[in-house]
Length: 99
Image (cartoon, rainbow, N blue to C red; front, side, top):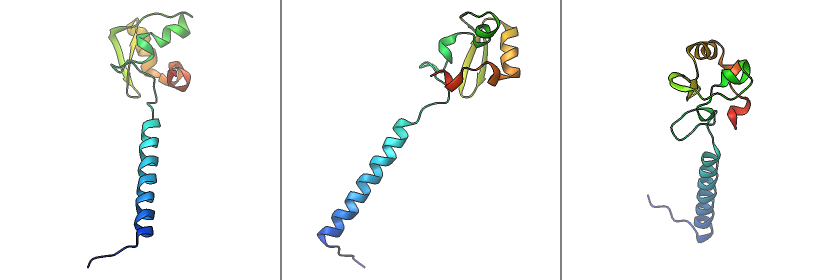
C-alpha cells in the first residue's frame, strides 16, 4: 500500500523530524560527566583531594596511589590518603564534581 500525503502534510512531518532531531542532539551535547576530569580521565587535575582537607593546601597526587570512583581516576599523595578517600569518597570529593 502506497501512502500519498499532501505537500502540507509532508512539510509538517519533515518539520517535526527536524525539530525532534535538534532537541535530541542538543540534549546529548549538553550532557556532562559527574566529575570534571582531564582528557585522560583524572579528577581535579591530579591533585590529592584528601590533602585539601587534611593539610589545607594543594598537594599533587601520584598515579601509583590512584583510586577509581565515579568514572574518574583520583590521585593521592599517599596510600593513607587513598584509603581515607576510598572509605568515604563523598566526604572528600569536591562539590558539583569539581566544575
